[in-house]
Amino acid sequence: MSAGIVVLGATGDLTARYILPGLARVVPSVPGGIRLVGVAHDDLDDDGFRALVRENVARHAPGDPDPAVAALVDDGVWLHGDVTDPAALQRALDACEITDADPLVLYLALPHVLFLPVVQALADVELPDGLRIVIEKPFGEDLAGAVALNAALADLLPEDQVFRVDHFLAKQTVLNLIGLRFANRVLEPLWSSTHVESVDIVFDETVDAQGRASYYDRSGALRDMVQNHLLQLLTYVAMEPPTSVAPADLAARKADVLRAVRPLDREGVARWTRRGRYTAGTVGAPDAPRDVAAYTSAPGVDPDRGTETYAEVTLHVDTWRWSGVPFRLRTGKALAADRREIVVRFREVPLQVFEGAAPTRNELRLQLDPDRMSLDLNVNGIGDPFALETVTLDTELAQQDPTPYGQLLLAVIDGDTRLSARAAEAEEGWRIVEPILEAWAADAAPLEEYPAGSDGPPRRAG
Image (cartoon, rainbow, N blue to C red; front, side):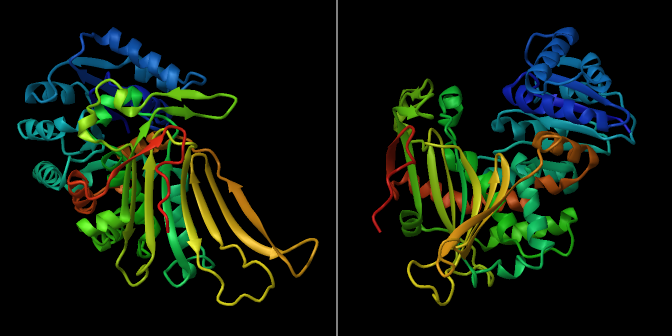
């Protein structure tokens, strides 16, 4: 089997940093190799495109050269054209020169405002039966946009040939949630409101928005991270046991979770959400500090737009299993530390039989980068056998090979949609987030400020 990959937006940052290195990792696993076709407005030819591919692969996926990777680079084809022009799209698909039996992937590595025009243009293109379309987030700017894009895709291809990819779903720790929950008798019986007090899903970053502020200012933390990545993590934590790990079964259980999330009205937004924007400060360890300018001073930022760089949302999943358990989703930029984890916090023991301080609550931590799992347990102390101390059972997971983007690309080539979101998931994500965005626009929750290098907006009293 060989495969054809057409990348629209082939000279962009996404292609350079993620798609091309991902392809370099997986092309040795494709027996017949991968035919790469790049499309963009840039004034290049085949040789110029191949040099660009070679440079980006060497920079972002270093290692010993592989003959398959060399073939990927040396056979690359460049097409200069408008990605919304049906004739240009037809030329790009034809340039792959693969058989009808082999997969052909059209990767939209483009600004999200071009997704719908490209899909509409494809209606006038002769599409091969095995075409797969890959769309990055954000999937629409709001619920109406997501519905329109889903409708256009449904007119074009069957749902199992559409890949709304989310590289978070390919992370080792996230995939291990399925194994932890559904292959261990000791854990799943505790996975409910009877034993779980709260769940935190956190993606804090020390990096600031300066390098991509002009894009970020039209998005913000809620759209950029919560609506897609963090809600997808929520589905894996809160889903009911599927009948199998087949794509349709997993997708159905994930969509059930999102449908069960209680929507927030204006009062709920004021109570259960926070938003913030960083001011000037210092980020990093004391021995390697980095001065960060205020977000509002970054090129391309309109301070009056009130874009948040920090978002915190507490959601409730109204199901029998999770009634009353708060799920706190939090993300922010220019924070004190990189903290990327899911924390399941268990309830206190029903009776305190030890004298002195109460036992520490058990916590299961699933760290996303690097991939680790840890569990806090209380044991008898070494000095006093009737006193308590807390120990942590900790394990580091094996490094992924290929990387998450490599896993995504291999899944697309294989036609496996499990690392993608289905249409219903994309729309339900906007159903949850859109009322928050509207309430924030009406100042239902204040835009708080926090110094770069801090832990975010100051904690509220009580």
